[in-house]
Image 1: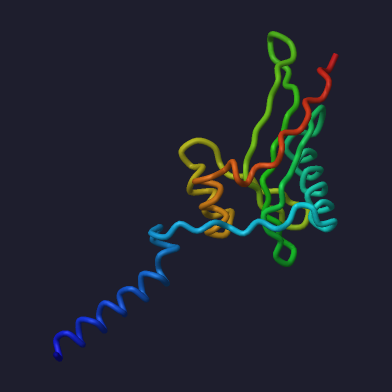
Image 2 (image 1 turned 90 degrees about the vertical axis):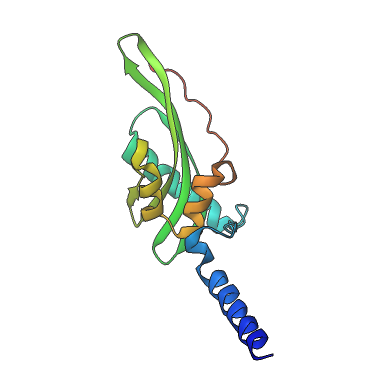
Length: 152
């Protein structure tokens, strides 16, 4: 009887510990709660983030759309999608990118490219938003902006 009770206590402690640690261990799949994009405040913040990202990442001839994922104090986490034109040897070619961003005041931070992308997303975003960005980015992306007219 004593062994059975001790076994039950150990199993209970392990289950509780797994529940607490699982977000960091990746054993439980949870989804980030994305705020209602139809609220006036979030529409205004999405427009602000899109404008900042457009100015800082691609200052001319671009269209940006942003979807706010979370706002805490002066920090906004969002997903930004950019479309525009880039000059090349063959003339103007369509260009674009889509990525999660962290906006602190007027500064827009974007993750690194290539093999550094997952690590930089984890540093840039809270753990639940990083998980969303890495595992289900379609759920975080805004609608794609309209491609602006080709420059002359």
